[in-house]
Length: 473
Length: 129
Image (cartoon, rainbow over all chains, first blue to last red; front, side, top):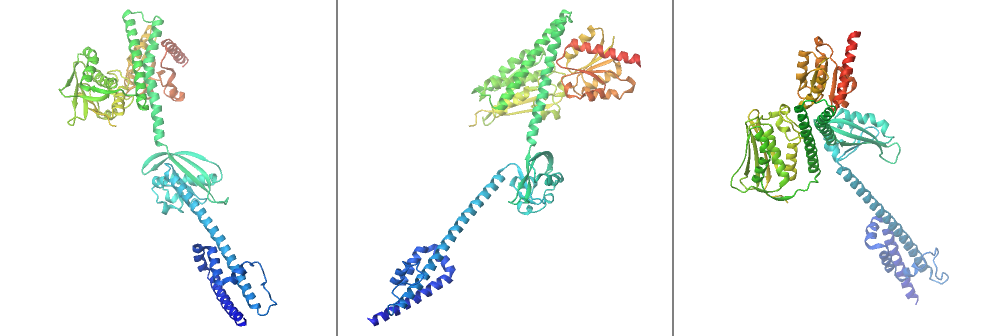
């Protein structure tokens, strides 16, 4: 019995010593813990320890909170196992506490890692959003050093974002007016609200109109760390459109006022009895009538162009024989030609000249071209409308040739612009300056075709329109 | 009665104005653009010019400015008859001798009234001078 007890104590001490050694090594070697803990977990480790300590340790585990070893201290030979159990229990408790702390730290680390990743993702997202902007964004700190530029700004100012950051803004953006704008705005704006400037800068040797919005931005949580953000919006195109609109209104109102002035003045003079001569009165009535027609035509053309430009004109697509349509246009204008003793004809071969088109719109196009040819051809001239089909049978072209005044080379590129009229022709014939623009809109916008003109002053002009035979899907 | 030069690129406007003025007993001469208007003014030395603004070759304002350079014809009062008169500053008009303006569409009756006023005023100024 004594021998058996002694053996048990010996084994117990040996086991306790071994467990103590293992625990100390484990505690000292935190790196081992950090490797083991995530992979096997604290519960598994506790189980391993319990297995190592045997039943004594298992029993002691139930008394973890006991500061002093329990057991029967008065019993002879019972002190060693009790001490052992106490040591093992204390060690076990320390290991478990350590594991809990480790686990809590790891959990905090994981949470911080997630927060960091989310922050990185948000930062990348914000960066991508700023890079996707068409506006150039430039931010400086309170000393005027660049802290941020987006892709548009890098492209606009020809900068390398990597190399430009932390450089002085006036060193990297070379245009002196932009640098001055930043310098002068910096002290005032970094604290105040938004301020918008409009300025024209030279960018890549090209004048560009910009709307620049400056606002103060917080660069960190500190109140002192405020910078300046400039958002550059290229408004050149907007300005051009606005100017084109203003020009259009000015030109349109001038074109409308002229016939209106004529009508009003003549009606008043007729009403006042200023026109006594019968022949003169008849002429007054004729002018009022033709000017009224001119007004109506002008308004119709303006509306047609406006509808096509706005994309609200619905074409009625059908197979149209362009040669037959050219003949029809010639017939419409024939009496106008005869008044000036101008010979007018339509020519086409025996091929098929059909194309998918809006019949009414294309007839208007051809009437405008043939009528113009007659208007700007002196008495006794010739006007010919010739229809041809392309070699690959993909497109039909109508050429309108005249032996008229001809167009100076400098005027040729402007012939299809709204309200453009060749200066030398203005006293030769009346026009709205919209007929050829309508031709261009109908052919190019509605029919996906092309228009063109060649001319020689004093010899004549050739206007042509080409439309594809089939509509592109 | 006075000699009046009417300058407009629209033949119908020239015709109406000329008829109204000649009916009132004035002598009317015509020109169809600014450059021709300047030449005609230098040759015929009118008492009054009625001119459009927007014309080929030389606009109404440029023509008036050019005429002011010729000391031999003296200052000729000008009436601007145009659809763009509201876009020209009064000071700019006064600087080139435009004494009054009338917008298009216009009343020939009102134009004749302005012509009479301007001629009377010029006549009074001559007498006073």
